[in-house]
Amino acid sequence: MFVRNRWVIGNWKMNGTLASNAALLESLSAPKPSVEAQSARLAVCVPAPYLNQTQRALGGTGVLWGAQDLSEHRSGAFTGEVSAAMLKEFGASIVLVGHSERRQYNAESSEDVAAKAAAAFDAGLTPIICVGETLLDREAGVAESTVAAQLAPCAALIQRAGAALVFAYEPVWAIGTGRTATPEQAQAMHAFVRSELASIAPNARDASILYGGSVKAANARELFGQSDIDGGLIGGASLVAADFIAICGSL
Ligand code: PGA
Picture 1 (tube, rainbow, N blue to C red):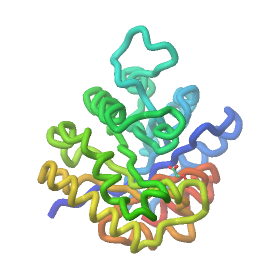
Picture 2 (cartoon, rainbow, N blue to C red; picture 1 turned 135 degrees about the vertical axis):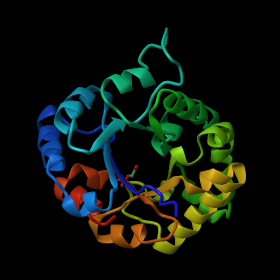
Picture 3 (cartoon, rainbow, N blue to C red; picture 1 turned 120 degrees about the horizontal axis):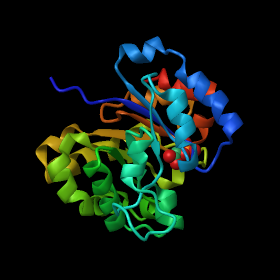
Picture 4 (cartoon, helix red, strand yellow; picture 1 turned 30 degrees about the vertical axis):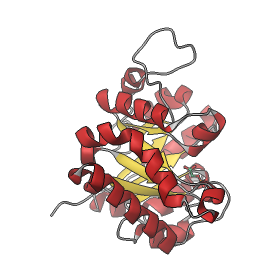
């Protein structure tokens, strides 16, 4: 039987200092037998200037790392951008694409997100493709169609990469708000995302789909226990070592 990969990924967002990162990374590098026993994948997505520090701290520990964004281009006159190949040089395995904060503050379209995801995949990185509806969408009854429209430009990539991709369903109204989707709400959307993926490419049904939005140590176990939830993308709680480790232990 195919077993989907289970993940807990920390998204540090634009937080950290060399000193505070050192303490956080040190506690992540200690062995976590309960998690290793389940062959789960743990990772952190750090601001680009901290990739070197993260590589030094986590190299050889089994904890993976990556970035929060990348350029869709390979190289060239794109001032301020960071390429997939540069991330690879710092040992990154994953990269977030299409986080709602980038869609909102950087006007990233779903087409941009698909191009970035393809650039990451082609360079050997696993893109973590983020989707999710706003509160307005949910109240208007268009949560599913919004998420389907966000996935649609990724169809060509989904057809060639299938289960090698990772998705994160993050309802915008639950990010950083303390308001989590109920396990039932999250499960319903995850089941929807999985059926959309399967309709694009049958083997994409086995892609990992993570939940994100105010995941805490107190609610992680119940969320991760839902049949279509394969772990979590953790913002605020990933900055507190004890909280993040407790969430990892809930996989
Ligand atoms: P949060 O953020 O856990 O702080 O809600 C999640 C995210 O933005 O990935």
